[in-house]
Length: 344
Length: 255
Image (cartoon, helix red, strand yellow):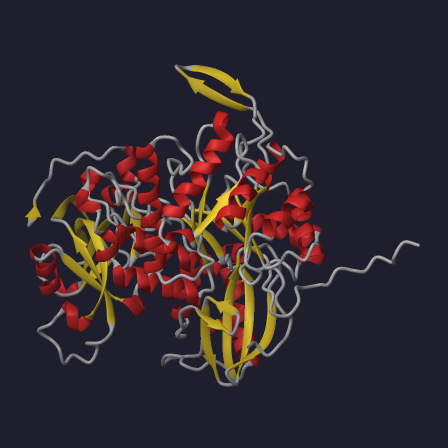
């Protein structure tokens, strides 16, 4: 006899925080907010200016009750640029400001993360590129440390390396990670990509390095060599994180519309590709992923919404969850607050 | 150094650069900005939008007798921000009552004189105005510097106009509120909601004090500020009436 289905609990068990929805870097919902100082070196950009922008942005996040945010990878401009030594001491110059911003993030209970530049490729066969990647990661870890952020503030990286040498790239990645200082390694998280290094590859690396896995759901749909279901993939990825630390996934929907591209005065239609991000999240797919997280008891778990509409996409998804999936209201941060209570 | 008419022709991207208009209310600070290249803002009174590529100065009536009084005439590129105590910032004043308070020291480049200073003919009580370089170079009055109205700022100013004393954002337990108002029987917390829902009210207790938290949809605030003010007035009455009102007749919206 089939067991009687049990209704899902209306909120996570005590001590387990609800799922945080966040977004990367750029704010679209509030004109004038910038993610970093984007001036070129001739105009003397500085980390301290980026931090002033970031402070304004964190206050905005608090107002809209978004508690997960990926900081710009270019917060400290030219910090590791080999030909611009005048920019190399920005972390030391901004020690007080970094600490103050870290305090603010903690006060606002914000999880901050980083996704260092696309050129960070620890699996590459090019030793110069690997050395540059290591310097970049070390600087990013130093920045998170200077802000005094806890272990949940991770830097998400891809394996990197030629797709034709998958096994060699994975091995190189592991060897390079072994040479990194512990303070850098402990900040790292590894994301599956959509072309070469799928979930089995990043799990292989996790088993040898302990680096937790960020499951990118869209990438998993694009590259799933073992035909793992979404639920299986979520469980495998979650298991790579310490139980008390919130796991992290990336959620996006594929672009589906045709785009007109104008080049040399001629209009050409570009078809959508499945790995391109759409402006917003498909609400029912998003809800399905969140229900999987709930039903498989994978919380605490945070969801980085990778959509072109950024914070606006998060706010819209929250509204759609409230409308179409009220059963998730208590599970998603920013939706379900106690109606009346003695606030702790 | 102050340069008179720099040969400066910004292109379109440059016009989008962010400018923070700050208040310059004494000649000594302007001299310091020009000669030492910095300006200070107390951390606790810093505006919500502090980051900028340029800092511009609105010179108050303290510059009476100067053509720059009540205008924005100078601006300068921002070089960096530092958090320092007043004691570190002004070591010659170690016994100042706020010597241990933190200030943002904004380092700036040379002051640039606007070809066409921006007068404040309609608005004299200027505080911080986040704007763009394009707005600064084109504006014919300070009121033209304002970008899209910030609903929180609008509410804040409306409450002040009704002689209430809004307090800046804070956490009430796990509840972030944007504005708090003290009332006879507790606190009213106002929270702007980005979602399009109706107004919601909740009573909570925090540190022994009753808090009525009013959640107002941001869109509604933009469309019907007066209606929102009436709801705030009713909520204040439920808490026994407002405290901290400045002298004068009672706030209009609760009558």
